[in-house]
Image (cartoon, rainbow, N blue to C red; front, side, top):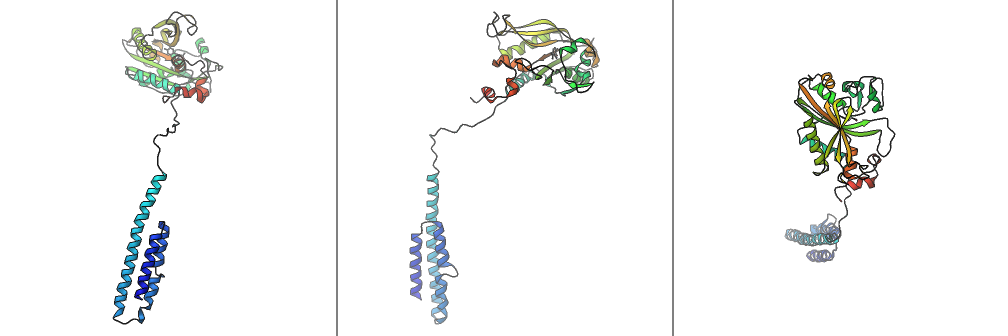
Length: 345
Ligand code: DAH
């Protein structure tokens, strides 16, 4: 019996040595040390032994078991280490390989220009106001000094939803809404970006839906020179310090006096070229001093308060800044167009 146990020990240790992977090692463990294994089988014959020999044989069996299982344990460590090394070798990274490009999106050029304009005015103490695109005729026209039947309403062909409700044709209604909310008190200093809608046929410079940014400042002692100074800062920050501005007399029912602002042409520096149609100037926005009627209708005392307002089209500003030649590019979202505004290339 003793010999048989020693034989088993020898056999098992040899098998352990030969094992090539953890699976095989586990099979050896089960077959030698398991309940149905040969050691258990040998010990079944213990009954035939004398009382003296029995404990010795038991101790020997335990010893053999311990030797086999520590052999297995050692081999297990070796095999585990081998497995790790193998895995590491198969996963080697070649750090000299070029990386795979990350396909990232970027802000839409219009979003970018609007955020730039917002930041610029926030820096001057303005806050951002947003209002409804489905607007009341009252705010879109009447409160802006455009009563029903006013001929200037035709300048902005409108999408009416009912007699009194329409898609706003400009962001100017936010002037009336903001002043009304402020209940006749100054100061007011807002810009209002948003979508507007007009019944225009789409072409290179027109779109039935486009963006506007409205500005409004109301306080005591606001003068035309404040408007001019503000617009000058805006133009220089947006287009470069070397750009000049000029104000031309114009007409808007909600401002008096009204002006249109031009900036000097970047291409020809004011000498005249085909971008500025030979004039040396490019029209940028409409502006003026808030009409007393507009102040009064919104609850402001027009003998105490004055204000200025302006309205601009970010599409046009982005067109000039980035050299875009067709407004429809902003809306058709051709990826080849949008990619040109990526900050990652
Ligand atoms: N709302 C005008 C338009 O859509 C633009 C405009 C002009 C806004 C003069 C103003 C302003 O606030 O003072 O054509």
